[in-house]
Length: 451
Image (cartoon, helix red, strand yellow):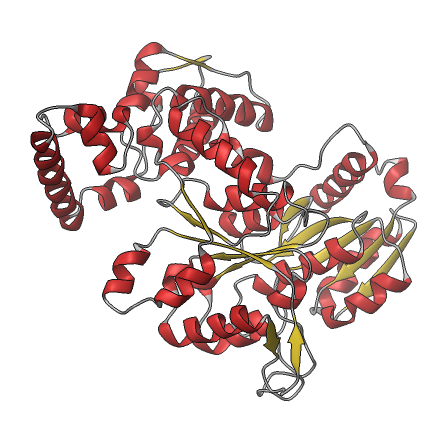
């Protein structure tokens, strides 16, 4: 049965499928105060300026020929900006967990998959309204979980937190480097949250997911008639982030031609919508991230040096999990408690041998892999104690970390370390300083390579 909160709620349904709007509206009209439907998301800004909604149910894909959910994430940002008190639930026919996490990070209250179950839909709406009403309970966002990589007492993490505190209040552009799964997107959001722009939008774009034809439209927007499917004007990510922070993820995957267009926008501080000749001034802080070796790409003329200078006023390098020592235990405790609560199970204890298995593993997928490993363990275990056999590591990451390229890189690293240690006659402090790593990280590598 719906709660009194749901009975008093006004709901906006946004989906370009008329059948979806009809069936969902029929269900909700008897369970809520009022329901409004809209097929065209382009009308959302005007609609949200005129009316107030307690709940917005937003489809992830519209007229685009590429159903990646990018449109839904864009319109989620607009709803959060124009109607920050509305709870937003995302709806998609594609049960992609990564897409769900991206939507939750950007402020959605929940994520539903078509075809939905009516009781699940109503329960999700009630839960979103309850969280929205309670000032003491923060919205359930994946950001809270993903922020866990910043927990830890290792030397590397203490140094990273110090740097974030120093650079966040400035307006300097930041380049975040690090392996996959180390939490680059989390650091970007934290920088924005601690900046003078925190009240303005944080807009993220995955440059690795944009094809050449989508790049300009996605970043700079387009005007009606700019291309075949451009039926209306649309703003791009730069305009959507006006006054706030634009997070350019996977910047290392950007082709040279697109690098030139991005550099021009950053230098001139204005953009021009596709199909238009009118420049639009933009005021955004750029935070970018990549796991690619940018400086090697510069040497092989695959990445523009002048673009790096624009991006990395400040540069942060996130440490891999294998170099964070006892942080693995702290992170494991957090993930076990989180997923036990999520799945309604008692928090399992981590047996000593199981903890040793975690600490001995290299975690090529970093914190993200640790998170998934422990979520799987919580779901599958029937015991109150996790044993080593309960911890199954990702076969994908294991395969990637043992391929021929990795073997060659390991041999190169081993040889370099041996030469530097010999050069300093076994002085670990001097060798670590020249290598640009901590003493603990060097000790781990010496043990790894049996040097």
